[in-house]
Image (cartoon, rainbow, N blue to C red; front, side, top):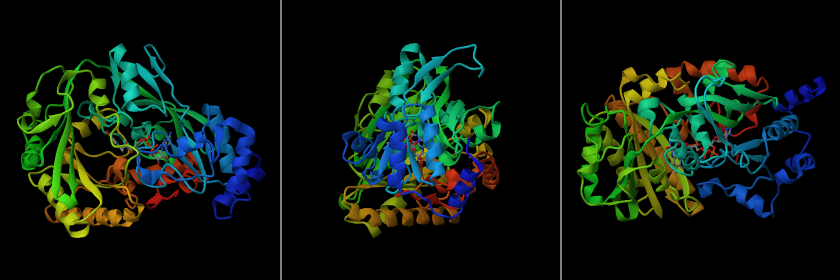
Length: 504
Ligand SMILES: Cc1cc2nc3c(=O)[nH]c(=O)nc-3n(C[C@H](O)[C@H](O)[C@H](O)COP(=O)(O)OP(=O)(O)OC[C@H]3O[C@@H](n4cnc5c(N)ncnc54)[C@H](O)[C@@H]3O)c2cc1C
């Protein structure tokens, strides 16, 4: 228990009085208590941890890295960090590309590396459904690989090495048309709060916090384990296909007709993960698509628009195990480029794809014609069925209304290697988002929402959650479980106030 004096010191520090300790001194305190779990510059373990990010732009140099061996160690460490008013960033899979979101140069990095639990829990159990105990360090490919011999799967990420924090931003899954956001399928979180308490957060124990965690990232604590509903999983049909640039217009038309009534999206077993890369220097568009159909059906009608397009290369079409399909994404351009991305949303319509692609090309030609890298978009179609399933499956703070129809998340990215291009890429992406939004506003296609898992550093997601109704509730929940605002002031990320708290 913290004494009254300690609480007073913490309160003063959080409200502006600076810490009595340097980060180096705090690292020493942590080292005294946790010895081998504290890594410092010069050791190879330290380098492995600070470089364990998908985007090179996310590689920072914290004075030390804390790699707790278990939940109690994490809780004890958080108490020290809070008591000394020390900034601390949290990283699980390291796939968020935003610089300073899951690392820091001037605080302690908590790396969740040792939280690797994988365990199936059958019935009967206190949570009332069979579930999978998923340690925060696990990657989605490893999870599917573990579950497959048991004939099971969970609603998780689509790319092998992505980490569990996908669940804290909602999470788009191959099963979302049937089961909503990945986070709608969490039945319990193990959470370390700002006071260093360890909570089992579920619909019965802490219903408000349980709801908040389904889309509000690191604003409430550190999740050590996600208990995920399992479902029976047989073979799927899938492909991972890239078409020649000459097929771009056919690809765009196929996307448009898939979104239209009767065009394929009504079949809830189908899921698309499309992407279009644009290389400004060669004025080249490269469309590609990973498609998954959740049944052992060769070439299902739902994908006919796409399977009819010729001139492609394919990493493996057919009826297959989920892991075979997901394994194709195992090395997905990790640790090669600096990445930046931004996202916006557009209503489903015949004009959506042309707006998404043409605006990207126009702005790139105008601002970065000789860019030493490439840009692109992941055109994520989110159907009304997906949104209805999210509500039916317990709801979440995002609370997008299926009555408004399908929504298209346009994730725009830039990939390059020279840090000198950071500003160019940032300016391109911000200009592109504002250009797309002025077009969609003019055409009545604007959809006020930023998908959490694809946010750019200047974007504010929470004001759109629940049409504006969720943010006041989230703030009340934050005050209840974190009265000193530790996760608002000391932990970088997208915060409930305005914008991102930068850890860099
Ligand atoms: C190649 C690629 C493919 C992707 N595919 C998908 C997809 O299919 N569906 C989808 O929805 N998104 C997808 N994303 C986006 C992805 O969900 C986010 O980048 C997500 O943050 C990744 O989780 P992570 O564990 O790797 O995050 P990290 O980079 O480790 O962390 C991201 C944020 O979460 C916080 N955080 C991390 N761990 C914890 C914790 N244990 N407790 C509390 N806060 C924590 C961090 O502090 C940080 O703010 C993809 C991203 C990439 C790069």
